[in-house]
Image 1 (cartoon, rainbow, N blue to C red):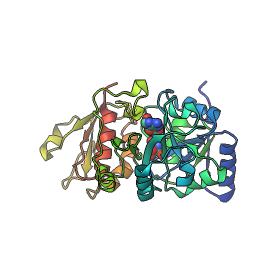
Image 2: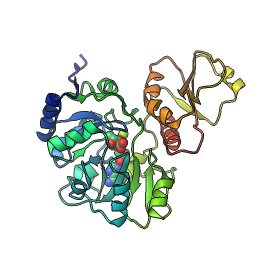
Image 3: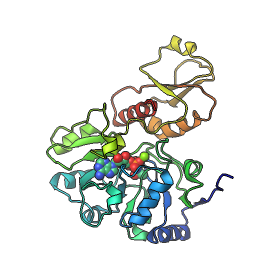
Image 4: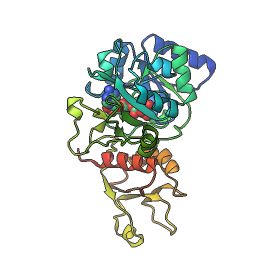
Length: 334
Ligand code: TXA
Ligand code: MG
């Protein structure tokens, strides 16, 4: 017999928030919304609690966790902030930006996969911050999905993926941004490196820091060695249905796709389309497209389609880049 669902979905009433914070303080797991995606949270200073995150997700131990804090002061208890890190944190926190910094003592090795660096972020989501404050702990939280699958942007997504493996899910409605945070590696402030594109753009970071932000080469991901960013795992965010990327659909080419295969356009086309054609945004807006991306990938992954042809978004915004990045990883071969 398959295991029965364990999870209960909690609405954010004051009593439920207090209860979930107690669960966290006692070493339990709580899935909760952030502005980017839902996270699976545990007390970041409790090694046993953090180990349970890896177990629930089926995540390999060489893929370290992001630690969420309520403010810079709390961040400084776990990470070493140089001048560049302070400038960036003051400019973009709270918000969808994660900083990789030298870690301080007291952060369990399981959180950082044994590395001397830690990833930290101060989320802007009111409910997630409330959990940090009420539990009194920094919260380690990866995206609340089984390892390798599409990140969740609603409580229902979390329930479907982890409902048999965790007990507590806080429902705060859909995540506003919809793609994971930008990750900036500032271990060496002279060589700031963008490990993952997100809503905060490389250009914005560059102009703030007055220095070029490097981008690591994609080809051979250092993932297995837990080197710079195991988040660079080539295949990630993947539906079960195969995905191929298409540079840009010309109107006539849509009709050549088999009716058993789905097409995911970036923008709604001006002409009428067949039942296998979908789009991320009706108004050509990257923010709307990012907000809907993961929900759309899940919907197209219901077994109806033999293949998903996903159109590469037009260049020009941080979120379009982030969407391109997630689609590329989703399309990477197993
Ligand atoms: O928006 C987000 O960042 C969401 C929400 C929940 O905050 N979290 C998230 O976590 O996307 P996760 O675990 O799915 O992705 C975090 C990535 C990992 O793939 C990991 O490789 C990278 O951050 N990371 C964590 N610690 C690191 C470190 N010390 N050095 C380099 N990369 C690190
Ligand atoms: Mg993830």
